Amino acid sequence: MTRRKETSTNSLNREILNNTCDLAYALDLIGGRWKLLILTNLGDEPVRYSELKKLVPKITERMLALELRALEKNGLIIRNVYASVPPCVGYQLTNLGKSLVPICRQLSGWGAEHRITNNIID
Image 1: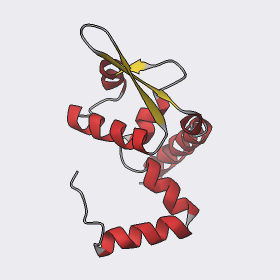
Image 2 (image 1 turned 180 degrees about the vertical axis):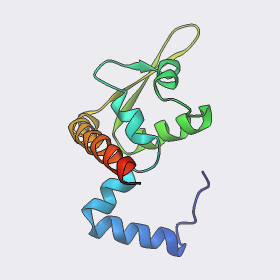
Image 3 (image 1 turned 60 degrees about the vertical axis):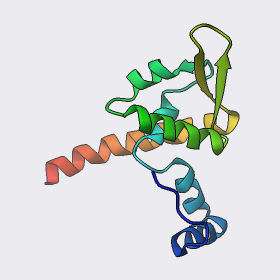
Image 4 (image 1 turned 90 degrees about the horizontal axis):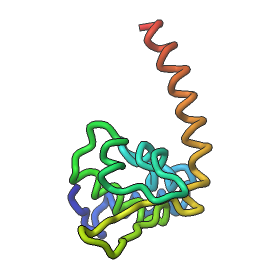
């Protein structure tokens, strides 16, 4: 992922939209291919990076690291570093992240229902 210039039209439009539209703001925080999958695989107990990598199929190391960093920056997860040899890192949901779990489950159910319907129609 490349960084956009803060003064670019894209960045300015994103900021304006996020400040005026609640849905755009929410989608900016959790949008993309991997973030919802990562969030739904985390819980109250910390999940180690390597375990999370196994739980999220096909994600690359780089993309997992980028998405975890973004989720942490947005206050949806907490990164815990444990003083051990070798170093151990665990991730868990914040209260804000936990509040998304029921929404994710509902969205998943919607997707399951409509994916089946759309496959029959096509």
